[in-house]
Image 1 (tube, helix red, strand yellow):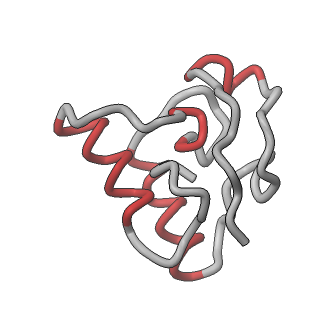
Image 2 (cartoon, rainbow, N blue to C red):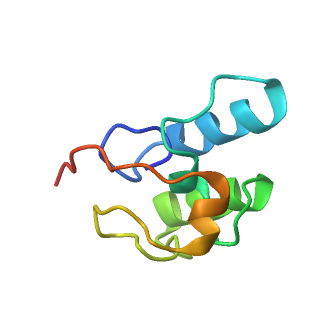
Length: 90
């Protein structure tokens, strides 16, 4: 949930938030760890591509803790900053 709205997929907004932050100096996402779709401790173009593939093609879902709405305990998420999740929307 890179855009922090409680929903993943269905629009390019998730990836746009990440790309705007990464390449245009836009505001940071509310939880940068939520944008780390590869769970490797960094965010960038490959995370945005994975988010788009998952949202529109149903391919390459983000790594855990997705799809659970929970605070991650992954060390890689700690590297980019993890926060309490916003309310999940079904």
